[in-house]
Amino acid sequence: QVQLVESGGGLVQPGGSLRLSCVASGFTRDYDVMGWFRQAPGKEREGVSCISDYEIRPYYVDSVKGRFTISRDNVKNTVYLEMNSLKPEDTAVYYCAARIRQTYYNGRCPARMNYWGQGTQVTVSS
Image (cartoon, one colour):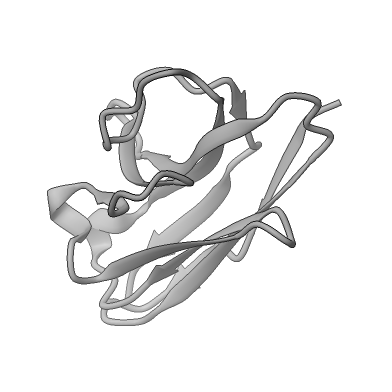
């Protein structure tokens, strides 16, 4: 059974930092893209950052460029999202997701991911 387990969310003041972790287990098929999505109340879910095992740069949505960094540890089957200079508008539930390997990847967060974590709340507030 595939599991994606997120951790690291919480309450932080504006300007603060958090690091999210997502541990993947139970995969019986190869996956190529992992990423972080978020959904704020009343808003659509958006792809925040995605990373692949292809030789291309990670993707970041414009609103987090220069502040967030995604990384992947294939030995630990873990993907991280380092979030710095957090803003109130970063408040959302953050979800980890993974995609079963496909023949094409456009370098962005895929519209369809095959597996999702349960989500972790990030709240940025003073």
